[in-house]
Image 1 (cartoon, rainbow, N blue to C red):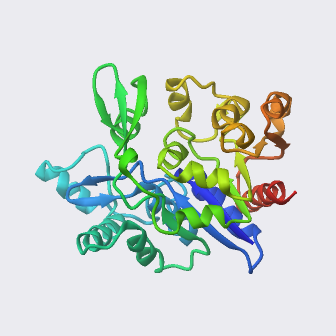
Image 2 (image 1 turned 30 degrees about the vertical axis):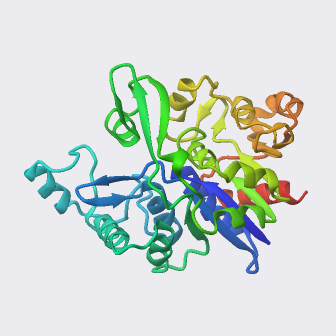
Length: 316
């Protein structure tokens, strides 16, 4: 079975880890990963979502912080601050910098990001193929009343406390899907939308020309997993993002935001938590088949169970 997952962020990383544990040895999982969080910083190309997913699947992520490598030191970041270089509020661990140095070196050698990602990821037996959604530089910027800033500044420095007016996926109109992305979607037996931030993780992927067309064309069912449980975000500040685009922080509102594939949207099925069972009528009325299952990924076992539920919806 060929399974393709549109993914980004910590929620996407944990979902992919659970899905990997749920599949059979003959199944293949491809993750199409958001690059909207990416940026150049102190001469290095930083790819937060690609790295978070890679470290999580490799068992190298810091579970306590939710980002970066386990057992990190931060001596280099301290030196950068002493020199007045970079963003003092955006700390890079020393091991993480090794990843960024490798990526930046290979990019400057002329390799596309997808090939660079494959080389970096080959260090560990991830059990999932990682492909950036595009090889082009697409970066999410946040428009506020006072200024426009890179998403990482809004998210990490300001903790999404400044009301956003809109989100600008810079460069997306001129971008193209990375090699292998369209085939991964159109040839899949199941396409899953991870419980990632709908606006800044999944949104930039769907905005890349050709992605929605591939989703419309695939014979696989497209199954999404709600990142909202009981009217609250599972992790992070996705509610601030949803508010900015006029979408309520509820599981049914996010489903309607994605829309039914039968009506020009992207979803065939939508998984909601047991606590949100009362929302299924609105989802079904929009042409999306709803499934009520436990969504909390509290440990490897519950994450794998969620992966099995998503696959069951895709083949059922």
